[in-house]
Image 1 (cartoon, helix red, strand yellow):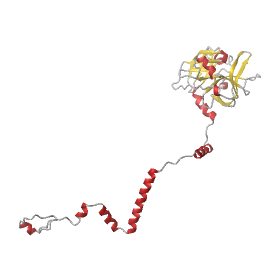
Image 2: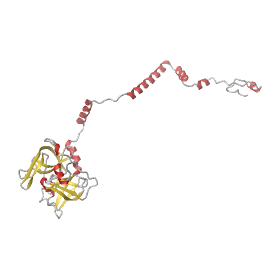
Image 3: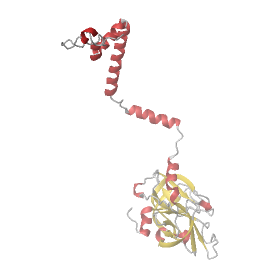
Image 4: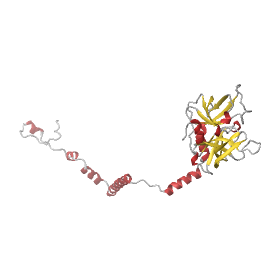
Length: 306
């Protein structure tokens, strides 16, 4: 038995008789809904749900739209000075922060060198110098070093040891006897040599914090901290000319500190340690150290003003 056409209302017999009138296909009862799926389908879907559920879904949709809109337009919270002060105070109370002197010493450490004068047999000439060792500070990438004249004076050879342990011979390239300063240059350099940053002593005032870094009695590098005790001081002894314009400080210094840097709290070199006051014969620090200003040292290397 033949099945009738799906969308035709005409009988099979009528089509067989060749009726001239064209058959008109009528849409399936669900075709109208298929062709206009959208708002009508949503309405019918909601009509099948309980009224409370439909209302709840609408409320949730509206709330999510409102939240998204306000979230995008929300202004960031502005921090007040009180908020900043509270955060800083909290950090100070809960964190172990390095001291100002420690931070300054860390900045200068890569530039401080040990200076050893030697005789022709390469033995330290401790009998000719205060302790057979002094200090110095690198001031340029090509290995120029500032130190004291009395550290290297009379030495046949000079050896310097850099912060990374590398050793090199050095030569004197300039002297400034009136300020007990010498300029030496290393013959071999580390790959990552870091010169010091030179500051200015013109901004120093009595009471300002300073740090001295060097090799007292050959031990080091050692760090001592103190304050500027005075400015524009004079110092001399029976066998040395009077030096003028010196910085006086109470940072501990001993034989071996000679030629090392005196730095401010920014790690900038403001002076070169050159002498300690010794009223007696102990030759140890009693509270007064003198340093030549970095401006004076600049005359010996042609780097003034800084």
